[in-house]
Image (cartoon, rainbow, N blue to C red):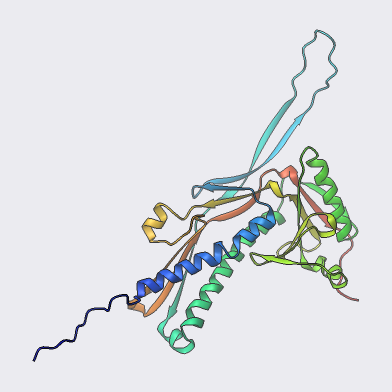
Length: 301
C-alpha cells in the first residue's frame, strides 16, 4: 500500500539558519542602535571617520609664534610660522570575539538564559573594551594638554571650563568633562541631579552650568579631563563590504560591528562571533584640559 507520508520540510517552517539570523540582527541592534548613539550624542561626536585596519591614529598639537604686527612703512612684513605636529597614539586594530554555548548548558538553563542572555552580556563586555580604550587615552599623557588644579571638584571644573573658553575663544563650544564617580559622590548625595546612561556610563547634562559630566570608574580618581565636544573624533573599521562577504557577517547601515551566529554540530554548541574596531580620540591635544583635585575627597560624613 502506498504511503502518503512525506519527509520533506513543511512550507514556511522556521529553520536553524533563520534563528541564527535573528540572533545576529538582535546582537547588532543591541550594540549599535540601543547604546552607541547615546554615547556619540553624550560625547558630542560630529566626526565619524572610517579607516583601514592597521592605520596609525594621531592627535595634533600646533606650535609657532606670531610676529609683531608693528612694521615700518615700506619694510618687509616678517613671517609668522606655525607647525602642526602629529603625535601617534597607536594603530586602529580589528578586534574579534567568539562565544560558544553547549547543548548541556542549553539543556540545564534553557535557551533564553544560556544563549540570548549571554549574547547580551557579550555585547556589554564589548562596549566595556571600547570604554577602556577611551579612558586609557584620557588617563595617559596627552602632549600639549593644559594642566589646572583646584581644592575640590567644583573648583577644578570651574578651572577647566574657564581654560576651555580661552582655548576656544573664537568658537561657541559645549564642554564635556570626564570624572570618577567617587569624586562627585558627596555632591550627588545632597543634590537632586538628573542622570542618564549611555554605553554603560552615567552622564549629567549641564552640570552646574559648566557642561556635560561623564562619570566612569575608569577615570583616574582625583582627576578631571575636559575638552570641547567638537574635539572628539570616532575612528572605526567598517564591518560591511569584504569582511561581511568573507565571514557572512550581519551588520547595519553604520557598519560599526558585525556578527555571525552558527550551529557547530561536531561540538554540539551554538556560537556567536563578532568583530569591531572603534576608538574615540581627541583631535587637538591643546584643546584638552587635565585637572587635579588637590584636596582628597572622602565619603565619610
